[in-house]
Image (tube, rainbow, N blue to C red; front, side, top):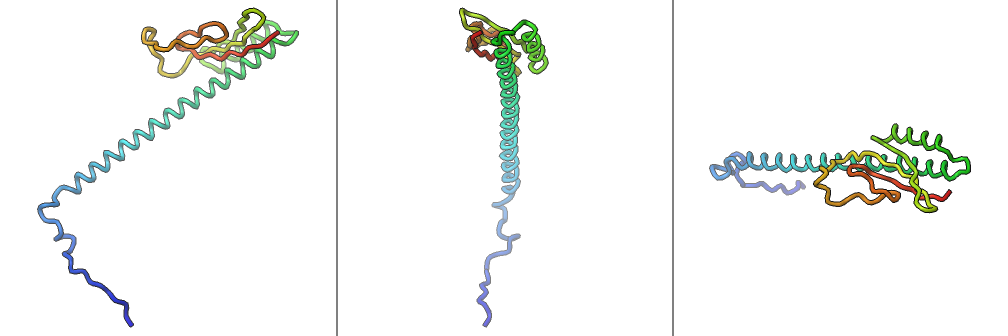
Length: 152
């Protein structure tokens, strides 16, 4: 027994649309290309943001590592300026305009590492939020900072 085959009596595709469908496919293609373009730009912007944040996180990680090393070197009984100079040169190598220093307030000292922020820097008069103090000292505009307190 043969399977039942249903034949359609509809018109062939070339005869379905006469003058009422003219040009709609071109508009649909243009709309699809526009949506695809906007989506691609959104994906690219997301990737750029992720790469920028990963770079900033890497710089903060290096700064925290340097601040920890400075705190350990200075809290030791043989802590001296040579160790600080060594870590300061390493900060200058790893970070853009990097600087490592020790700030003492009272009986507590803080190992402070500053570096130039690589994000879009505002002009001096356009700063809305001032940077938070870092180790008892305000960080300059356009700079990021990590401070680690320690006791000698």
